[in-house]
Length: 206
Figure (cartoon, rainbow, N blue to C red):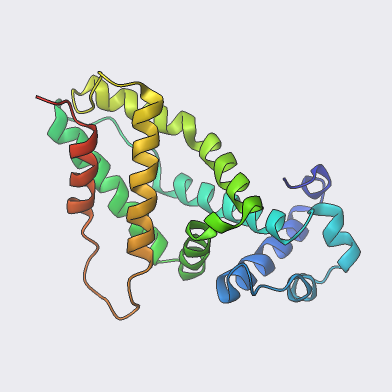
């Protein structure tokens, strides 16, 4: 967890550190990233870096959290559909997912960061950070679930926390697959098919 001292830095200095860290992690991944290179690029001393962050995992987790929250803010919330019914709800979800992928494609450094983030399951420190980020977005997921249920698009016979866990697990698998596609694969992402898989898992069973 980032230390409170970091928040007391002037905004320009915070941004210098975060930009340097984003460049380093996007270029080298987590394991090969060098804190010394981040320190040099940010123009700070090694001692001061540890004054703000516990270690490399702590810095990586904070950079990822900042960038992902910015991405969600840019895309905006899942809007209430203009028409009633399940089809309108799932069309809205598909549009949101497509917009998020478009914005991610426009920011290659953040996309690279996301690939590293999704592959962090073997690192206990990053696992904790993933859980913390999921807890941060949980209210957002709960609002989408309520919207889906009110539209008749999401089943009501299972607990909300289970449905959210299913959505997170499927979303992580889909994102991992999309972000691991070869750079020369220029085919549009199959967002309709992916959201269709999610819909079949969450929609009311007849």
